[in-house]
Structures are given as structure tokens and as C-alpha cells.
Amino acid sequence: MFRKEDIEQIERRGSSVKTVEEQVERFRKGFPWLRIVAPATPEKGIEVLDEAAAEAAVKYYENADINGKCKFVPASGAASRMFKDLFSGLDALNSGKELPEDSPAAKFVSKICSFAFYEPGLFGETVYACPEYQKKVLAATLGDSGLGYGSKPKGVLKFHRYPDGEVRTAFAEHLVEAQNYMRNEDGTASLAVTISPEHQHLFEEAFAEVKDKYEAEFGVKYNIAFTYQDKATDTVAVDVDNRPFRTEDDSLLFRPAGHGALIHNLNNIKEEVVSIKNIDNVSAERFLGETAKWKKVLLGRALELRDKIHGYLKELDIVTNANIGSACFASVIPGHTGLGDEDIYQSEACMSLCNDIEEFLDRELCVKMPAAADCKSRVEALRAKLDRPIRVCGMVKNQGEPGGGPFIIAEKDGSTSLQVLESVQINMSDEHAREALSNATHFNPVDIVCCLHDYKGESFNLLEYVDQDAGFISSKSYQGRELKALELPGLWNGAMSNWNTLFVEVPLVTFNPVKVVLDLLRPAHQN
Image (cartoon, rainbow, N blue to C red):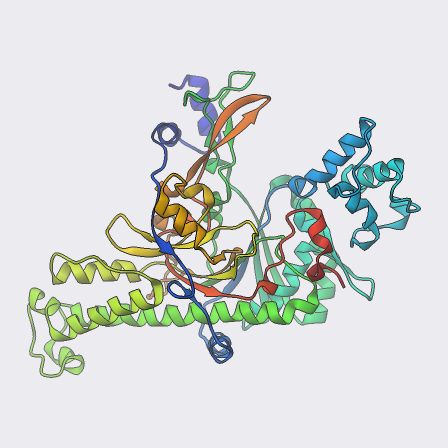
């Protein structure tokens, strides 16, 4: 399948022939559909907290023992999609057409003074309906001779202007958030920001502009790590016949494998507790109180879950340790005089503990366990379900925004679990799956808190908990030629499939993404 030149190209990228061959085979085999049991709803699968419970979660977080915190911000790539409508409008104007009054580009020009990046000297005197003025505004926004926003990453774009004249980028708002709810005991705030290598200087400049000011104003010390999506995680493209796609110079074409590749970046974080939030999901500081409160709620629930699970694992260690002395056993199992291996798994203490764990898994995490072959197998299955990374995902009521949906699915081992599914992972030809999708009430705005250390204090190897069957294949093109692209299991989908998962409802006010530039006109982004 591969020539000598192909093998050299593959190895230069840090990949292997075996990996690429497996990717090609995946195109041929496809991905299996996940079996949906039901949508996760407030009736079953999504926790809805009243005010007292929310406050209790906040207090739990504030008093918890945590081995380091870090805010993880996926910020890779340019903001070209954010300005897609403006590019279309500029193309139309350049070809002599007029913009419809209700077109996104015309609306943008008519509201130019409301954007944080508005500069009178750059955009000139406002004549909103004039095609030449429209062309000037769009070109000044997108082109390198102006703001150059058409090719810059979202993180360094000016999102918010404050009454005192301060203007903040999306990245700056993440810095302000981090010092509020992710501050470590020593006064530091750590952020891991995934970027494209060609944009690093822009982020470094954006950080340098505010670092001293924010550290003095908030009494914080920032630790910033800029990380890249590893080229070795790129996947090979294939043609419509599932043969490796070749470019005009006859070399293989590799493509970024989606945000699922970022599990490698997340795996490099050594702190115990990590908060994940997309670069464009920020709001003006007047919303920070509500945003921080609910982030702390998620953090508190994650830590409560951590402590409950770690407690169960430690209890399992005690009641199933066949080598423990009878005197020690007597302290936890009254009347115990020393048992053999099989007797221990069948002991009343062990059976009672297993019952408690199964009830907890079902009640809290929607994990129903299949019947085990014997008592020892039951214990081992429960231990395996408990001893894994933890994530708590904020869920907002579905208002038609794009995002992954929460579902209860059937696992390969016969158990059930909570999962976030993208629409491409749902078999629309299956009536039950379509019905589950239509009955879904919430979606995931990528507001996630993770606990990444096991009950012995060691970091999990997150790569061991990825469901490799949870990726998908998409149709793309290259220089007008059709191709197929392979998306790795998404960071908050298949890459976290084998984690312990809890869904918690959060208010819509905490979700303020900027997918298109006109989103910056929403109240959450205006002052």
C-alpha cells in the first residue's frame, strides 16, 4: 500500500505505518452506531440542583483538598468560520452586487460601532448603506492591511469593551475567569491553552499586554502553558474508494483529526482538577458572578463524586485483601477470624458493599451493571467501573444551539453509561434513536470539570479510557477533489467515553459562545 517515500513521510510526522494502515482499515469498516437506551433528562440522567444543593456544592469545592488545578482552553485554529458571512459579503460587493439589508454582512456594517474592535480611524465616517463603505468596513475587518481578523485565532480577537475604555480579548476573559474560580492555594492560576504553532506569538503578545495589570489587580500569579495539537495525531485522508488520498505531488494527505486529538494534551496535565471551556465561551465581566458560581457547583459535585468513589475503592481494598491478618479484618468485619480467597468475595461485608456500589452507580451515574458470573467477577467489574477518570458536564436546556447531546447508552460489556453524543454519531435510520433525539431536553456546551488522579494519588493515563469505536468519518474536499476525513473520538465524546460521568443542569446564562461575529452583539458581550 505504501511506497518508501510514503513511509518516510509517515515517520517524519511521528506516526507509524501500522497506525496509518489501521486508519485506512477504519475507513473501510466504518464506525459502529452507539446503542441509545434513552436521552438523559432531569427525570433520569441530568441532576437538577435547588439553591441549597448548589450552595452546598460550592462550599464543598471551597473546602476540598485538591492536588492542583488547571484551566484547559481549546483555542486552536483561525476564526475564519466566525467571519464566513463577511467573506461572502465582501465577495459579493467586489463582484458589483449590493448586500441585502437583512444579510449578516450588511447587519455587521450597520452595527460596526457596537463591536469592541471598532476603531474610528480605521473604519472612517459611517455611511452604513453605501456599498463602498460596506466594502471598506469588511476589508478593514478581515484583511491583513486592517485588523486581519479573517486569519487570526478567536482567542486574540477583541470581544468586549468596558465603560472605562478597557478592551478584552477572549483569552483575556479566560484569564479573569481563571483567577476567580480556579486559583490554587498559593495564589497561582494555571492555564493550558491549545493553539496552532503559527499563532503562538499572537497569544504571547495578548498575554503580555494584560499580565502585569491582572496580576496586580487580582493578586494572582499566572502559569500559562501553550500547547499544540500533535501532528502525529493527524489522520490520513482517503478517496471515495477508500484508497490513501494523494496530492498533486503524489504524497499522502494528512488532516487534523478534530478536537479528539486534544486528549493527548489533556493527558500531559499533572494537576488533579481540570476545568474545560472553549475559547469563545466567555461573557462580559458583569456575568462573572453567575458564571463562577455554577463553575464552582460543577467543581464541588466533581469532588464529592471523587471522594465517594475513592472511598468505595478503599473499602473494596480492605474487604477483599486475602492477605490481611485476621486481627485487622476483625476491626472492619466483626467476628472475622480469617477467610480464604473465595470466602472473602462471598462475605457479608463484601456482598453488602457491592450492593451499595451498584446502587450508587445506578442512582448517580446511570450505570446499570450486568449480572456477574461469580462474586469475584462482580467485585472486579465494580472496581473497574469505579477506578477511572471523573468528569462532570454542565448541561443547558436545549435552545437550538449546536452542541453534543446527553444520552444513556448501552455499553459493549452489557452495562449502561452516560455519554455526550454528536448528531453524526446518531443513527437517523433507527426509529428508536430518532425518537431519543427528539425527546432530548438538554445539550452540552463544553462546560466540563475533570478529576484526573486515581484513589492512590497517581495520574490516570487518559489514553487508556478512549473508545476507539466512537469516531466518525466526514466528507471533505481538496482542490475540488472529494475525499473522506477521519475524526478521532471527540475530546468530550469518545475520548472520555470510559470515564465516570455526571451531568448537571446549569443556567443558560453561563453559555455565551461566539460562533459567528454577530453573536458579539448579544447582551452577554455588550456593556
